[in-house]
Structure formats: C-alpha cells, structure tokens
Amino acid sequence: MKKIIALLLCLITAISLFSCSAENGSDSDTAEDTGNAAPSGIDADKTVLTVGDLELSLGDFYFQFILTPSNMISQFQSYYGEEYATYLIQQYGFDPAKPYSEQQCPEDVYDGTFYDLFFESAKNYLTENAALYCYAKDNGAELSEDEIADIEAEAKSYVDMALQNYGSLAAAYGDTLGLINEEVLKNALTIQAIAKKGQEMFSENANLTQEDFDKRYEEDPLKYSVVSFLSYTLDANDTTVTADDVKTYADELAATTTPEDFAAYVDNYYNNVLNPDLEERTDYTVDSLLKKNVAYADDLEAYRWMFTEASVGECYEVFGTEGSSCTVFMLVSAPHLNDYVSKNVRHILFNIDNYSSDAECKTAADTVYKEYLKNPTEENFAALANEHSDDPDVETDEAGNAVGEKDTKTSGGLYENVQRDQMVKEFEDWCFDEARQPGDTGIIKTRFGYHIMYFVGDGERISTGTDKIRNEIMRGLFEDYMEKIGTECDSEYIDSVLK
Image (cartoon, rainbow, N blue to C red):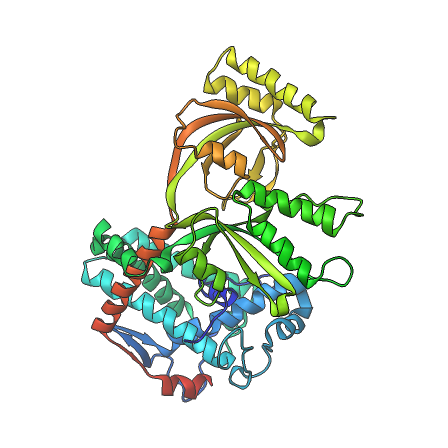
C-alpha cells in the first residue's frame, strides 16, 4: 500500500477545491483569457475515467490532478512569499518548476514520483466522488433549481476571481495545458453536490445495527480498543546512575501499585536522586506521566502485555541494551472502546499563582462557595464565576479555535462537552464520577489551584471507538458498491498528455 502523508491528503480534501491565491496575482480587473486553449492534438473532452454511468473527461481529470500541487504551491507562497519554491524543495523535495514524473517522492511521503502521487490522488478522489454521485442518481437524488443556480454562480465567481487576480484560469491553477474552463468548474461542483447527497443516502441506507458493531468488535477487539498507562524511562549515565542502579530503581518503581505512588516515586527519583542540585524542581504528577487512549501496537512488547495480560495497577519493565536503560509501565485503564458521554460543567477557578500561599487561595474559594450556598442556583453560580473566576473567557473563530481573551467574562464558567483526557485528572475525576447528578457542587484542588465545581449534566456522546468500527464497515460496503458498478480509467491516454 502506498503511503501518503497527512499534509498531502489535507491539501486534497481540507483546502477549498477552488482556492485561488490572490497574493501573487496580477492587478488586472478584466477578463483577458479563460485559459480554454488546449494544445493541438489534445482532446479535452475525451472520456478518461468511467465510474458506473458517469463519464469524466480529460479536462475533469486534469483539473483534479493539478489541484494538489496548486494548493501546495499556494500554501507555501502564503507562508514564505517569493522563497516558497526553496522551502518546498527543502521540506518535500518537490520542485514545481521541474517535470513531476522526474521527481521521486521522499520515502516517508510516497512510494513513487510526484506525478504518480498526484495521479493516484486525483483518480481516487474522482472515483469515490463519482461512485457517490452514481449512488445518489440511482436513488433518485436531483439538484433543485436553486442549487443549480448556486453552482453556476459559484463557478462564475471562481472565474471572476481568477481573472481579476491572475488574468486567466490557467494562471490561477498553474494550468499549462489550457484545459480548465468554467464548464469544468461547474461540472466538478455539480458532481460534488450530488455526491454529498449520495454520501448521506448511503449512510442512511446501510441500516447498521448494534449487532453489526458488536460482531466487528468481537472479531478483533485489539484493533479498536485503547488503554491508558503511566511510563517512565530510567537511563544509566557516567555520573550518577549505573546499569546496576537502573535495575534497582526500575524494580522499586515497578513495585508501586497506584498511579499516585508511581508519580511520587518518579518525582523523588528525578529531583532528589538524579538531580539533587537542581535549583528548580521538575514536578512529576500522574497527569504529566499519563499516556491516554493509546491504540494497540503489535510490535511493542509492553503494548502486547497491556492489551492481553495486564491488570489495572500492574507494572511492567522493558530493559534496553545491556540493561543500560529501563522503561517502566503501569496500566491505568484496561482495554476498552473509547465510547462515553461527555459532561457539561461550570467552575470558578482560584489560580494558585495569584495568591501568596495555598491556604490563602483555599480561603478565597471557601468564601465564594459560602456566598453561592446562600442562593444555590445555576444562575447565581454563573454570575459568581463571571465575577471571581481566574479562568478567562476566550473568543473563538467559526471553527471553535481560541483567538484571544474576551474583555469581560460572559460564559459563567461553562465548559460544554468535556471529554475524557481533556482536563487535569482531579477535574476529570469529579466530572465523570458515576454518582454525579445535575446540580452537584464541590471544591477540588488541581495544580492550577482551587475550583468550585457545578455539574450541569450530560453532554454529547463521544463514540471514537464505535465511529472507527462504523467507518470501517461503511468503507467495506462502499468498496463493494464501487466494485459492483465498475470503474475504467484510460491511464495510457492520461499519461501521454500529462506525463
């Protein structure tokens, strides 16, 4: 199986299919050339890919083929300006000025040339979209008049943008063959819109049951399960620890039976045994040593132990060459599907860094908590959080990413859909306590300080384990469908034009 790294996959799917960078374009305000001037002997309308009843032309294929390098170039131009080509060569060994077929991809990127990569990416994307298009059409899906009008307007807007900033579609997309025109854009948008309907219909018609999920999980539970564990590596060195010491310390660490004892041992070992003269301590806690929701790896000895033999709280030692190092593992959670219900909570944080002592910080929390208890409602809690919490509200963009702090607090300390492994351990333990009921309150301490907690209730269901099973089942059903409707690709003609 050829390997494509995440960046290149994202450039095909996550970046807008029709992104024309305006930063390096011309200042032309009028249309001079739409880029529809194929060289003599090239048939832009020739069918080169057939999926079911849908025929895609050379122009359709070529447009998808050039999107990946076009988006790569645009992205690097936005980051590095005129030096973009130098960085593309340094980071990926890709020179946009040289023939793609003469450039071998790095081994960790793809097993083949850049031409092979772009060809396979285009073929796979078009084939899957076309299959979903066919499924939608077979099941009666059509575009409304409004949807058709929107597609025509969108295609025209891309043309106008390209003409304004580059002078032509060809220049906007790096189209050296002049095969891209407004009809190609409209066709791509139309197929994409109907394919989206097909994807929704395919999922609905699959009618998967819990029995389907259970059966797949039982077939290979290791494939879908995750574990959480603590780990720490002890190394021999010339000044303080010998190989014999490593064995002694590793055995002592492996004798611990709780995560707290494991973390306390590591903390003492690092700060008092290994580095007693350090001016600043490095605090080791359960959170800092915890590896959360880790998937199975057959080639790792400790992972095989954790997934097939270990009990929660047990430790395991893996020694390096000649005993010069040892990594000690403690299993914290048994293998399980990562499915659960998230939680909605409010909290009021009293940041320990804002107080002269722990006692002063706790007193502040106790004082506000007593004030809340005089009127124990969620509304009062939210008001007190806005007034007293040291946890700032943040502004977010449309994707939910933090972009800055708000001038004033407005959220009332609300955290919605808190997921496991998202918060520090004490915060998470309080939220996910099985006995927790809406309206429950209390004070907890974390490394950040003291938190007055208010449990709002359950949030959305998180089903990463089940989702993985669902995706695999759906993938298998979809591959069966693609095989049923059939695919033909005229690779020879495509290569003769593009290579």
